[in-house]
Length: 236
Image (cartoon, rainbow, N blue to C red; front, top):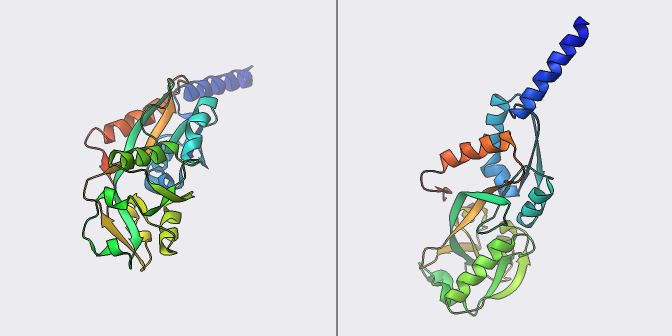
């Protein structure tokens, strides 16, 4: 009987820990850049605070975030998300960056210190694929149209690194986050836009219809960090 009572006590403790979010499984979906920028510090904190919590991370594209949250396949998503994501999906912007123009070093516009968006109206663009990140893509298209032109999208690629690579091959120019300058080879230069144009590069999203104490605590932590102006990426 004592053994049974001990087992029951351990089971009750396990249930209490699971309800409190101190044990069990937390599944995170993240785009590749978030795996470098956001997750290392967060996961380290979770390991320290909740040693019995198992954290599973899977790589996703931004377009997969909302369906995976709605289906309950993941508990948290770190992706390029902005605006209305549906009735049950909530999001919090974490990182933003300034858009700049990436172009071949021998391009005529490379001699300018700043480039207006409208001057790109006849340029072939290498864009981040809409299939990967529809909100990000649509926002850029809308911004170009607000400047009086519909962009000539020559290529759609799956990563910002691929955008820069295509520019280096002479396949067009690209609008990319300024912090990605470190990826540019010698034959690609970055030039700031005349107008300041910021984009959300990473947001955290969750399903408000699926209550989870651990998720709620993580969101509270992240919200506390972002109560000051949204974190900018370091440029260099």
